[in-house]
Image 1 (tube, rainbow, N blue to C red):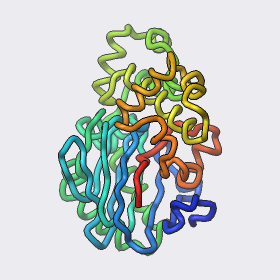
Image 2 (spheres, one colour; image 1 turned 30 degrees about the vertical axis):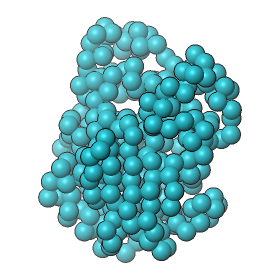
Image 3 (tube, one colour; image 1 turned 90 degrees about the vertical axis):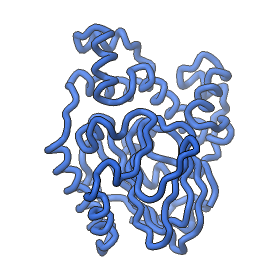
Length: 293
């Protein structure tokens, strides 16, 4: 529940995570608090989960900019939002990562789709403001996690369900590092390629091919941050060559591999999301930044 072991660039930020017993399947959370609210300017990096950034700041708070469109406050970020910047005077923020199948149930079919960036108020209506007020008034991060978990449980109960076949293909895509052939995945679930493509896209907002590209990119981003040279990262992640890696990195982030390698947000993944790292799976990252404070 502290920032012990956080790299120097995050020395002014407390990072809190739930205890393992309070974690829900397919969902992870982390809380961030700047001891002295400071303007931020962060380029977000795509990852294979839908992210809720719930702004709990007392001041002006979070401002986000995507494709020239600006928004303010809490936001839902889809699977591959492209070039996205977050800025503003952010004091406290709760970040919730949802695996795509869970996101479909929690948010509905229109939210969390590939490339979408929507305000939480547009997704949850008046409930969004009430949720923010309750979370802001909570006395501790543990209390906030319990509240957020209860909200998510209730919404899962009322929400959409993805086909077991779609869920299986997503899991296989992640565990295979995005390197399993789509035809093989279709055979595993007993569907035609066309049916898999249609159902997967309708329910998760992304095609199987795009999902594989996203998972492969996420692994590459972590390897770059770990200090591996781009040529080695390309070979390890399943890219044809280094230019292929460069094109994918540029397409997903607008950044170069060198810039992604230096992303400060990647440097705290093992602190903010320890459950994935302990499992040896640093490939299911959350909205992360390569910006400046």
